[in-house]
Length: 280
Image (cartoon, rainbow, N blue to C red; front, top):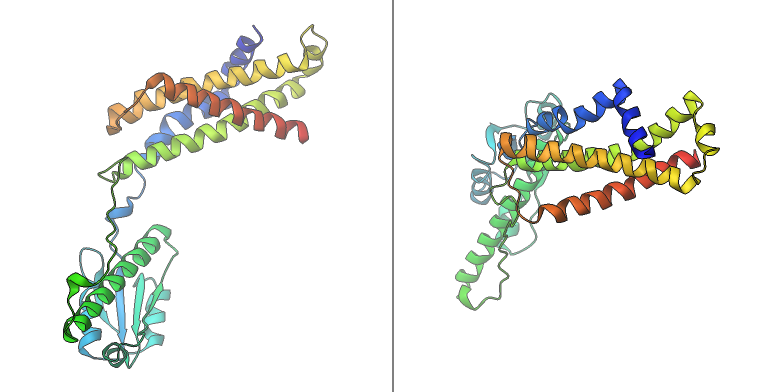
C-alpha cells in the first residue's frame, strides 16, 4: 500500500511526472535525431614542405569519402590561421626530408593538427588519419621488402578482422536511442527516490511515516520498489512504443531476462539515490 502511495504522489507532482514521461519519450526521439558519426566529412588542408613523390602519394590518400581535400597552404602559420577560423578541421604538415627518410628506411614523421571544437568531427578526423598513415606505412614497407628481393608471403603478419555482432550496420539511431535510454534510466533511478524523500520533508509527512508501525527499512523498500516499477514502465514505453516501431531497433533475446536485469539495475541505482540523500 505504501508503494501505491508513492506512485500516486508521483502522478500528482506535475513537474516530476512530466519530466519522467519526457525522458522516456521525447528525449529518446531527440537522441535518435542526433548528429550521425559516419556522415561527417572533415575538411583537410596540407602544408607540404617536402614536395616529393612520397609526400604527394600520402596527400592523395586524404581524399573522399573520408576527407574533403581543400588544397595546400604555403606555410604552417597560414595553416593554423585556417584552423582557428574554422575553414579546416585538420591540417596535415609534412616536413622536409620526408621522402629521404623513407628511402633510407628511417622513421619519417608527419603532424596532424585537428580542431576538436566539434568533438565528433575531430574524433573522426584523428581516426581516419591514423588509419590512412598506418596503411601508407604498410604499403611502403612492402615495397622495400620487394625491392630487397624478399617475399611478402614469408613475412609474418597479423590480420585484424573486426566483427560487429550488435548493430552490424552501425546504425547511429540504434546506438543513440539505446545509449540515451540507459543514461536516463540511471539518472531517474537516482533522482526519483531522492525527490520522493525531499517531498516528504517539504510537506512534513516524514515524521508521520516514522511514527507508523512500519520500520525504516520497510519505508525505504516501498519507495525503492515504487520507483523501480516506474522505471520498468518507462523502459517498456521507450523500447516497445518508440524505439522498435519508429526506428526499427531489434529486440533479440529473452524479454523476461531483460526486464529482470533492468529491475535489478534500477533497484541498485535507486539505492544510490537514497544513500546520497541520507548522507546529504
